[in-house]
Length: 155
Image (cartoon, rainbow, N blue to C red; front, top):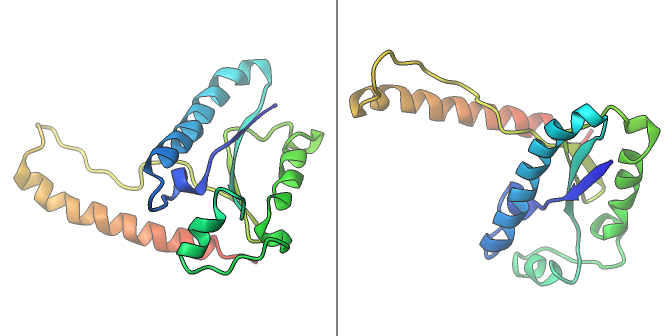
C-alpha cells in the first residue's frame, strides 16, 4: 500500500501558500500516475487530503477568522490516522487512485480531474468559434460545481 499526503492547499487552494500548494497538488498527480503503474503489482496508491489544526496551520486558520480549539478532535490530526489505518486494511485492498479528504469530523472522497463538457471542431479553433463555445463550457462547470457541492454535504 502507498498512502501519500496531499493538502487542501494543493487541491482547493489557500491564500499565502502557493509554493506549498503546488507541491501538494503535485503529490496528488504523482499518486494518480503511480496507481496506474503499480496496479500490475496489486499495489494500491491513494492520497489523503487532511484538514487539521497543526503548528503549521493554526496561525493561518486564526488569520482567516476561524476559531481554533487544539483540544477538539475534529480540528486535530488524530482524525486522520483511522482513515490511513482503514486504507491499509484488507477492507481497502481494491481501493486505489482515490483522494480522501478528512476535516472537521468529515471524511469524503474527492473528485478527480475529468472533462465535464467539450466541443469538437473540424478546423483549428479561432477566436470567433471560441467566443461561441466558451460561455457554455464555463456555465457547464458552474452547474457541475454546484451539484458536486450539494453532493458533498455531510449526511
